[in-house]
Length: 400
Ligand code: PLP
Image (tube, rainbow, N blue to C red; front, side):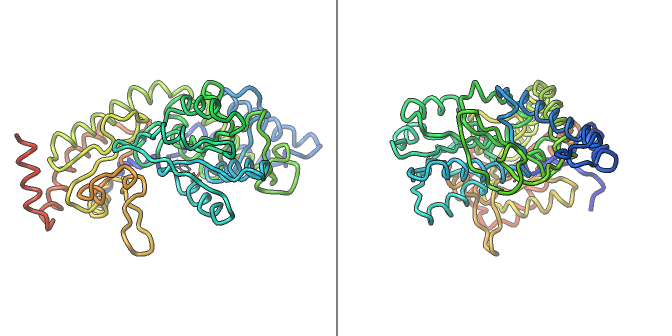
């Protein structure tokens, strides 16, 4: 095992920022009161909760801090939004989503289908862009909810949320719009008012807060039922004593992320592009799965044709490099990613697709190292491929 650690899997999770960690510490052992308690000792905890809510409100540009609900993760934010909206509209049984959502949304819809809901899954084109015409045509009088992710976790492709809001409002103003914004928080600005969304969820651990905390924006015109029923916390929308240290961490991460947006758009993007250019220039069987689609600045998804992604990841891991494969290993069989399948990525590349996701901690030295070792790794694996003729043809075409 190499001593090096080159962490390029920031869409899976991120390192906690030192300033986030420091901000959380007092709330474990000193200011540990329950923020709902009446005595003076609880004042600091309850003020910390208020401050964090204001930080998240500002991060979203929401109108009021009453529109913010703290949750435990992105999955809980999505489940609360979706079930909460549907429970308030029991007469409406139609939902629209996309084929490329995260499993926390897709698997919930599969459950809802079994309970009598009709769900339309909107497709994407070969570079991951959503079919807006199909979405427009699918909205009808019975549509209770549209849910579309802001950016895809595997490809980084950004959906035109503002445009989708306009389509929904023009077709059926009573339809609610939920956006899973987990993969954009800290990467591009989020402005819930400009976007025109009704509900929007994020997760702390994707932008340098710890795992186990998230937030959900619900605009003041949208009423939802709680997913977790119990005490009066979160204005009755999410029971359970608030996780004060983690919520403080989330608030701090929002402040820091806001200040880093420019860095993401310039430096993180520069490093991502440097990695991408290096790979595409030096490895003849590499293809950029997203082509020219609009993407978050930190993500690239590259297919290495005629070789296995898992093998690439194992070799990279031995060199201290963490990345992720486009395919998920389910019940012993290697199922290609539902996202890349929806994009019709050719079978020659789908199994060999790798996601690299950078962060503000990624350096030029990290990228130089990956660019220096990756061609050798790919060549070694290519030599074991049963598709030698096809590879020779690819090489010939690339050098033309
Ligand atoms: N939505 C997207 C797009 C994600 O990428 C993830 C996590 O990978 C989630 C939701 C779920 O977030 P969490 O792990 O906080 O539940």
